[in-house]
Length: 239
Image (cartoon, rainbow, N blue to C red; front, side, top):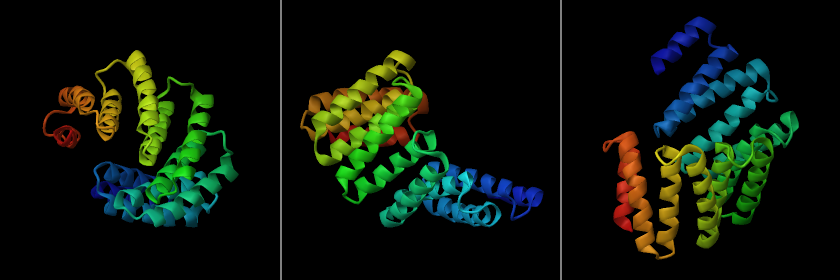
């Protein structure tokens, strides 16, 4: 990946927005591997190029702010994440308005920051707003709506309201099953979340049932060596 960054710099130059956006994509890839320190370094480099070339009100610059906030969440640096998320949210509203994918997506990241910092009411309110926007833009069967519902369910679970978390997760599980079937990672992830919520409610038999179903799906999709499968196996052992 770093060799590709060097090639991009040779093609576009070290101050070109296209090079900055390529760096941003590599940073995102690093974050998906859990390499958040590397992701932050690359994103900061991209941010500096975009700021100089396009200014602070360009959508690409605002996008890198939002991405950076998620990388800092990965590192557990929630105050840094919150500051970046607030800035990205404010600028997204100014540039694109509230009824947009970008604003709703940034709201979800902001809600996660609020949740990690213990501001649960604001986390729930922000998550609800994101759900409403995604529903109006895409409808209830779209994966973006499902992701927002899952985020809201996690907020309620953090509150300790596992009944509400289970209700929301079950609704999106049924939608996902109807639209995409059961042999996919989205369905397995929702199952895993539901299993953890039932475990917190001390309904271990239900947690084990759902956890085993999720584990079998992940085994078929990813194999036994994949971190997703291993994490699910560890969770199942704790129920």
